[in-house]
Length: 152
Image 1 (cartoon, rainbow, N blue to C red):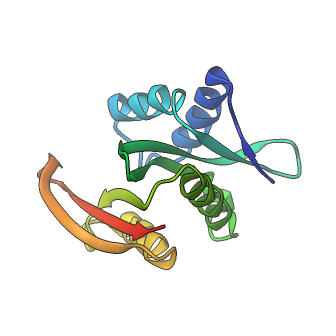
Image 2 (image 1 turned 30 degrees about the vertical axis):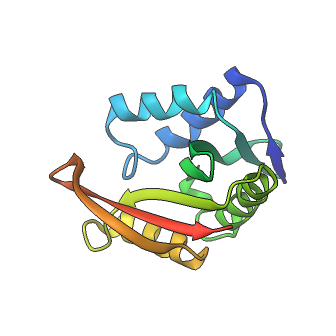
Image 3 (image 1 turned 45 degrees about the vertical axis):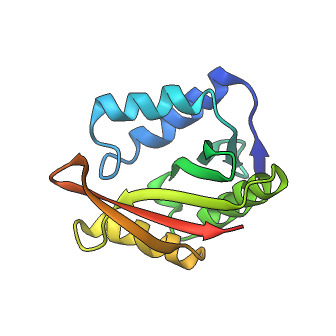
């Protein structure tokens, strides 16, 4: 079940639990802590599993009056490829469209750089995103930033 979470501390608790399970994607402690802290202040949806445990989340950040960005998203590894990411994305897309945004964007590491991020790229393409631009040094030389966009 997808739930919108409003409580700042609960958002941070859920984000921390999920991101610490994903060191292949969120392995730099400083950046992971930033994702956790910032997600506490953003619109936030989480997957509540049958066992009353949160197993994934997504947070949304406004980048312009017309565009929302998937700021951070993660699903516990044991629940990958089971449709939870798609459910989360659908919830955040509906929220963004209802809020009046015209576009959704997401940033990830460029296709072909790391196997794990290739899975991330494939997910967003399957959700209907298109490649907009690569910023080779936005993050650092080892992580070229791929920006994807989608019309809402």
